[in-house]
Image 1 (cartoon, rainbow, N blue to C red):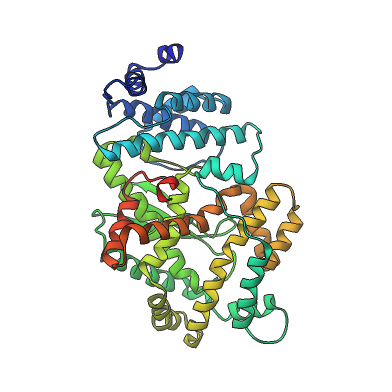
Image 2: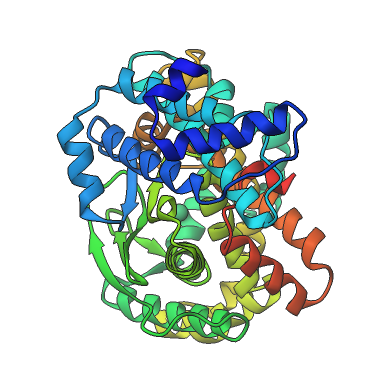
Length: 437
Ligand SMILES: [Zn+2]
């Protein structure tokens, strides 16, 4: 500890003193401002790791000086890992007794995010973790295991919803083909969906003046849509148009990427913590970190927040189907199919686990995606490319959503107002997956 303290700045040392005082039973005297020095170092280390991993830094809108510091230091992944481990040692295993519970959350957030950074650095250094160990190290969560029989029973339910001749995959594909938005109407339908999601969100939570996003259409990416947060309450939302766009995706994307999903999450964090408290660590979002479970989970559950199931079906039937020129009599059946497909999302975890742990090769993974997600060969190949890039990140969409849903129900209670209050609280503080359990 002494040698470590000598190498640290005086602010780190002050924090060490307060943590040591807690451990020795002396009256705790934690100094919240000592965390600022840890936070600045955390940002520099995250930017340094981003130099080795182009997907690591999802967003950064903090000072250019820290970017220049990371560039100048030019740390290798081994040194990033060692530096992250040193900071974790400084922070200690437990949080000091800060008077402000939000500062306590900050302390824990920094420690857990640094743990994920060290794990990602180990991976970039060539270490291979098993799927479950990786998920726990990077996302602070234990993904459930489902047997094939679980997914087979969901497929049987889908089979009953889509009667007719031929294999289920072909019947599903024929049904989906009837829901594709004509290319010329995609933008109109998306903008209508975004306007509705925004209005429904603003009815329950105020957003800072001037928040906005730009919408772009792209091709050739491994993802379907992406929110790039630029800071200053501004996002760039990109939507991939490699494949025809089914009508469901309008509400999915508008809520998930925009309102009350990623755009709102980043906006509220910037308002409450970066501007409100001067907490610089929030100005960077490392993708392979526990924050992603909160981000993806809240973005997916945000769909249910803005559009509880029956309201979504009615809005699609009465507004979006006519805008797209599609047969609105399909809306109810489509909603029932969607419910099953959403539960099948966990199948991607199982395929990713078996593929990354070596039980399936890429052809086997594509076959499994075709069986359990009823994907076309092209879509299955794209999913495997996604898994190659993002690996155990897939758990954040389904497990994240379910953890957020349970937390909002527990904290927010039965009333709509209570659930929105809980949801806003979740998006405005440095929550970790462990806080949702
Ligand atoms: Zn997302």
